[in-house]
Structure formats: structure tokens, C-alpha cells
Image 1 (tube, rainbow, N blue to C red):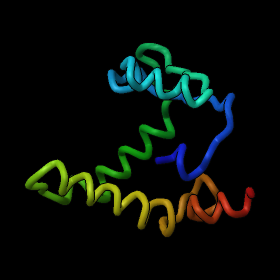
Image 2 (cartoon, one colour):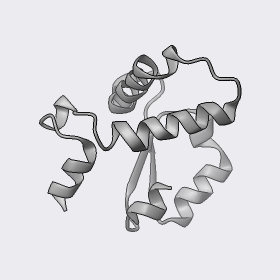
Image 3 (tube, rainbow, N blue to C red):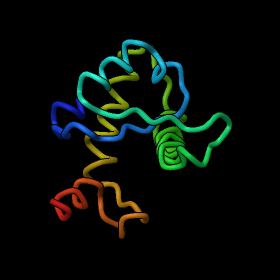
Image 4 (cartoon, rainbow, N blue to C red):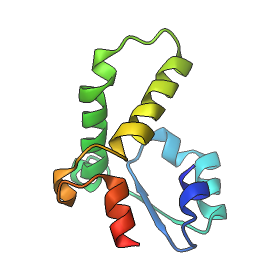
Amino acid sequence: MAIATQRPGAGLIHHSDRGVQYASAEYRKMIQSAGFRASMSRKADCYDNAPMESFFHTLKTELVHHQQYATREEARRDIFAYIEGFYNRKRRHSAIGYSSPIEMEIKAA
């Protein structure tokens, strides 16, 4: 989805933790076919991935731990709505001057 909407150019560095989903052959092939360079955190180095760890903590604290989902599809829809409808568009982030990510992206363009 990010590739389709943001259209990043070849040479982008995609950094992730060492999760199985990022190490899978299918995912690595997608990254390579987009012209990206894969980068993984070092084993047992949580600081490499601190921004994502912070995001997932926020997601769990503000949404997931307050819900009980009957199906994965229900959880997927709810999490998507939270990220795209609230987190990226309305939620203020102290690390970017109390702007929302979309506001910061527009300013940077």
C-alpha cells in the first residue's frame, strides 16, 4: 500500500527488525523488485528499531488492548481505520513538533 500511494524511488532503504515476515523470501523479493535496499536490525538490538517499537506500543495502548475482536478481519479493519483515519491524520506527535504525520509530510513536500 505504501509503495502504491507514496511511490518511493529505487534506492530507498527499507529498515526492519528481524521478524520472520521481513526475512521471508516473498517479502525480500517484493523489496528487491521495487528497487529498495533491505536493512535489518542487529540481533538483540531493540534500539535499531525504536521508532517502530514505539508505534506498536502506542497502537496496543490506544486501541488493541481495549478491544476484543471476533475475527482477524474485524481486527484488520479496526487497526487500518486507526492508522489511516486517526494516527496518520489527526494524532499529534511530539517527535515532529506536535504535528500529525500527514501535516509533516505536506510541509516537507
